[in-house]
Amino acid sequence: MYRNFLRLLMLCIAWLSPPPLVAQTDSLDMFTVIDIAREQSLPALQAKNTYLKAYWSFKVFQASLKPGLTLGTTPVSYYRTVTQRYDSELNQDVFKLQQTLYHQATLSLSQQVSATGGQFFLESDVGRLQSFGDQGSANWSVTPVRIGYSQALLGFNGLKWDKKLRPAEYDLAKRQYTEALEYAALDALTYFFDLMLAEAGLALAEGNLMLRDSMLINGKRRHALGTLPLDDLLQLESSTLEASMSLAEAQMNQQQQQRKLAIFLRMDSLQAPLKAPNRLPSAPLSVERALTAYQAFHPQSLSFILQQLEAVRAEEQARKEQHFQANLQASIGLNQSNPNLNTALGNLLDQEQVLIGVSIPLLDWGQRKGMVKIATSERALVAVSIEQAQSQQQLLVEQTVLDCRLLRQKILVNQQTRALSKQRFDITRQRFLRGQVDLLKFNLAVQAENQARIASLQLLKSYWQTYYRLRSLTLFDFETGKGLGILPTE
Image (cartoon, one colour):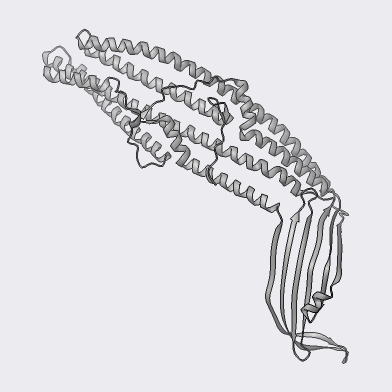
């Protein structure tokens, strides 16, 4: 019995003593987990595709500003029907069979003008119409060149505003992608520390069960000698069963947290042991620097500018559309028609076209004026909302910086406290091995050491969560002193 008791004591020491350090090549640290999350987690992939959508939308807009060349053609248009026509000889309408074959092609080059919102165009057109029947004929229509310009007079120039808004929207998409990666990193380190805490809790539950088992063995020995009442022995057995249940719950929690991290990283399993970060960022954190970085890099600051521009755009559009609308289209070119194509091309005539369209609202019961008032009120509302949101966001940045500073100080103090408690624990363990401390006191010291280790992990988790939350609020790397902005390959 005494030999078994000593064997159990040595096993308890092996289980409850601090685990040996694992080589870095065989472990999975927090920064490696963050890198994996940024590369292949579902939030990162979703952010990448959202950015690529914005990237190609911006490319499409850029292409729309360049000259466009279009070929429009009607290869064959065949028409055969009985139609009503006027017969001048009979001086009456008659029904006659009409049968025609038509071919046509148009080559058009167009270019938008952002300064005015108009469009220049250059066209070339050729067509052939052939009629069948007793009086069948064939005729060519050619327009070798026709140059023109169309413009909305005194109207709203949407293209001018698009050239202001679209680049800013693309820049916003880039910042939002970087922000999404920082939030993915924040989620990854949260899962990482949750798993580490679950493993530390599992070690604590195993140690508690060891303690209860050893106390139960000692209790049975004392009960056999008649020095321990039966009710105390039953209490020891009940405590052992509760410790066993706590161990089962800790094992299930550790498996769940391990599975959560693996799913988030899109990995089949996690075999490598986890290693907590052993260093803190050395760069000092200042509120002024964080606020400057927020204004310069965070997507919300650019989003505020975009909201203001869109509100001004809507107001200008409402004011422009309040009055009459006029459109101008003018063109000049050469054209001719003839049964012979060469004859038509050799005897071209001038072609001039001018078209002015006007739409004047005579009675709308104040509808257009009301639209202007709505746009003006919306612009004022946007300005107030932005000012309020900016104030709240600046307070959040300031508070996050202060929280990060405080947590860093707590960690530094905790490291000193942990070093002292580690020395006390080593002294207690040595005294236990020499027989100067009983098993109960030693196991209580082991439990206190494991609980202190869990508290240190929780403090470390809170610090890194706050630090990466600050990075996501500023999109700024305080260690390198540069803004964050890694973009995926298109």
